[in-house]
Length: 283
Image (cartoon, rainbow, N blue to C red; front, side, top):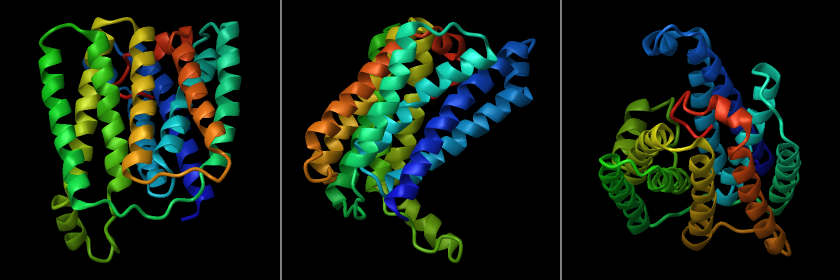
């Protein structure tokens, strides 16, 4: 797979998360009860978009550095705000427009700065370390669930989803999974990074839902994306050898920080508030 194709998967993930949030919001509003809302066709379509987006991001992480994929998927906030404006009639503030344009510019720079990455040869110690980090985050999250601390929950949710990205980057996909599905499944079950990916993914979903239930959507989402972009991006460079094209490092750092800033603005957008809480994903 080429880096261009991997970038396409990352952009597809951002689009899927953004559209999925709006579809689930519309479906939730049309359901007479929570149970009926969960069965509404639009809500189910939104869940399908989220699932496909998540799978697309995992594919992208096999070829692109973590900072690139995390920054691109953060662009889902821009998609959500635009689609919410069209479908839900949500108000689009002037600073939201500026943040959307900044997101597009930043993601363009990141796509140019992120060179193709060779497959990661993560050590056994690192893969087990990521699995342990996922478990420790889950334990800390369990303690947070007993008290209404939305910002702490959002921070741990961002950390959990960041660990998910790192596990996906460190994970070596099974060879010929269709030809030998039993062997591929067994290899995955023996892989600590695969367990870390599952544990951290579930932890992030639960903690984000808790944070939205007890806190304001703007601060919660802003903290979530800031942690989810910055922490795994730095860890990817230090632990997984993620690189930047020669001469592009200052631009890549600036673009990543610009993505975080734009995400913080869009997190407080009326369009984000209209769709938040419809599901348990960052998209």
